Each structure stands twice: as C-alpha cells, then as structure tokens.
Length: 141
Ligand code: ZN
Image (cartoon, rainbow, N blue to C red):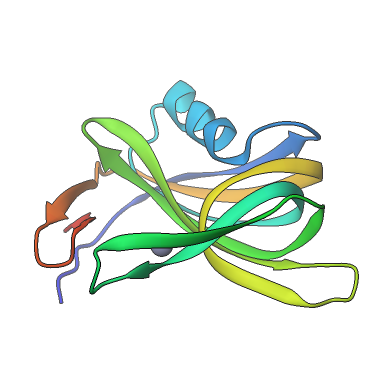
C-alpha cells in the first residue's frame, strides 16, 4: 500500500444536461479549471451506458451496454493525470424501471435527464502509471 497527504483545493457542483457525454463533460470541466486530481460522486439518469469489469487473467475489460435510460443510483470516481491530461476512473450503479441494478466500471454514458456531480479537487497533481503485472495504469502515489 502507498498513500500520500493531499490538500483540498476546492469543491465544485456540476449539473450536466440531457444529451451531454458524461466522461468528456467532466474531463472538459477539469481541463478548464486546471484540476489535476479530484474525487467525485454523482446521481442522475443516463442512457447508452457502457459498464464492465476487468478480467485480470486476460488483462482486458469485458463490457455491456445499456441503451435505455437508467437511474444513476451511485457514481463514484476520481481524476488523475494520464500523459499529462485529466483521466476519469469511475464506477456506477444503474437501475432500470424494475429497480434492478447493474453495476461496474464506467466506460461511457450520455445524460438522459440530468447528472448532479460533486467534485472535490486537490492541489496536488496525481498521475497514473502503467503497472505491467496488473495491466492497468494505477495511481502513482
Ligand atoms: Zn474501474
């Protein structure tokens, strides 16, 4: 385990509108504000969501897409730098009309109604670097 102290730079509340791309909208905001590390949570509703999980033995993600609108029961994630640019790592729990849930690593989604995001930004730049054993870019602390 590794860890480091970070300083809270500030908090932001974001409201994404219907039709906006979740990942690129959050990353655009971070780029405009010069945010190099952050933690975030969100609720709302999305469509065309692609979520999945990581298969360590194959070092690849498996994913599934949900075209119809789903509630975002919970979305949590962080921002760190990959090759100098903000990168979002987020997981989401989605629920359908029957209140059945699907959850996983978030690849992409489009806002179906609204998305309300709380983003806590830190002063420090935190990067992700490739871990060859895992096959993923991990937080470099
Ligand atoms: Zn993940």
